[in-house]
Amino acid sequence: MTSHFDERETRGSEAREKETFGALQALLSRSLKRLPALDSWLGHPDPAALTDRTALAALPVLRKPDLMQMQEANPPFGGLADPDALTGNRVFMSPGPVWEPQGLGIDPWASARALFAAGFRSGDVVHNSLAYHMTPGGFILDEGARALGCLVFPAGVGNTEAQVDAAAKLQPSGFTGTPDYLKTILEKADEMGRDLSCIKRALVSGGALFPSLRQYYTDRGVSVLQCYATADLGVIAYESADQQGAPHPGMIVNEDMIVEVVRPGTDDPVPEGEVGELVVTTLNPGYPLVRFGTGDLSAILPGQSPCGRSGLRIKGWMGRADQRTKIKGMFVDPKQVAEILRAHPGIARARLVVSRASDADVMTLKVEPAAGAGLEVDDIEATLAAIAKLRGTVELAPPGSLPNDGKVIADERDYTA
Image 1: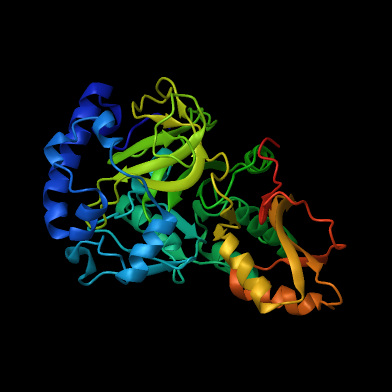
Image 2: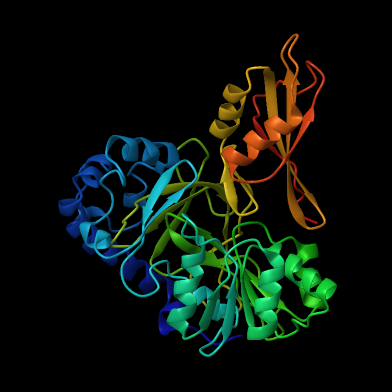
């Protein structure tokens, strides 16, 4: 897996910076005229002055709450989507809600080079189990795989037995989906007596690929790499591997992305190696987000990847800068917990705890009853599923037992095991 998708991946760092910021200047020279809302948010900058990272860091960071306010005031995209991206295209809705337009052209979320780094090639049959419903998750890797020349089966999520039946007939060589769902499919295939040893490689996203889970796949002869992607930006960074399929340290930042790491709660970049919030500028002409705060924690790694790709590397996903948490590939927001409390006035306090069991995410809502209130666990679980779009359990907690630390969502997953 030492070959490269194209020559851009091995450019010298100086050439990459010069070409990338030249492209940013050209993009904004056009986009600021077409998108007054973007121009206003950025403070009417002079594109010609954006020659380097120092100049870029003077612009404000756009975070999810800001984007949601802009979209609410000017639906559906807050005035940030280029009109050319809205003709004959797709629109998606992610939890929040947040609206995203599909980008322009082939492979609009730039996932093809991540798939290539994971060993996918033209002619591969790919079983894609990411969601195609409302959110762009399934389309992100679907478009990249087809751009590579792969044949894609849009399996979507759930209905595992039917997915096993389909895979047993199609005999896919590759899998795309969340890190833990491939394990679910393989174990269901074992239970059903179906042979899915045809699956030799996978690119996963939408959650953490824990070392123990990666080893499980290695033991089954499946090389699994991960990419870091968001609905707003597409594939931000991806892993590469050595000739034996072992992953190299960190993730390589995708081409046409400018990544910064800022101190959480500020717009200020931190020194290389320091953990902070990942901020991304994308050279996507259809949806040109500038200094978009992902809310995710990461750090920039020194040096280049041993695979020969010369792009900046990040350590990978290291948790959330805020309490918005990704569970089973979907974000859950503190506002959603507040909705549950409003739906059940008998709850005095609540804390959503995220843990792991059998290599899968587990979501537990711990609730304290108000004085004299009786709570129906089944009713609250139904509300949790309806609002979060994920199944979880509800546990009653004694009054005053939940920590008074301001946390609405507690991520207790161990990312080192």
